[in-house]
Length: 93
Image (tube, rainbow, N blue to C red; front, side, top):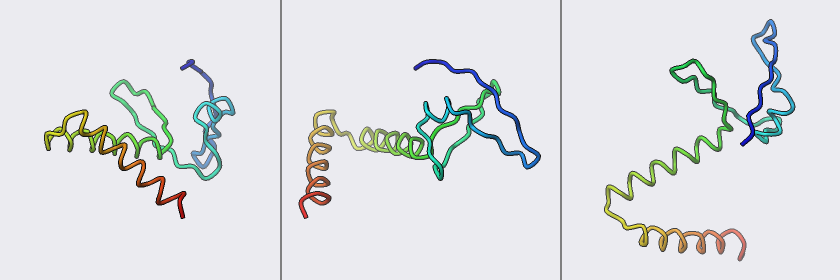
């Protein structure tokens, strides 16, 4: 991904406008939720909340499957079956 450096100004209400180039890269729209994370170096990372939720869910699933002793093959098979079931539930009405 390309690195972009830009600036913005904090208003008297401590609000900022996200520059257009950053909005385009993050694909954010009005009403989207964002998560701000500050790392040990003081760097701020901004992610769409839906992506953070997906990352956390993926991590939880990974830990749980390892704990239960599933193999990669078993997990792939279960995922494929779940996708088929979800597809039917949503589109074959």
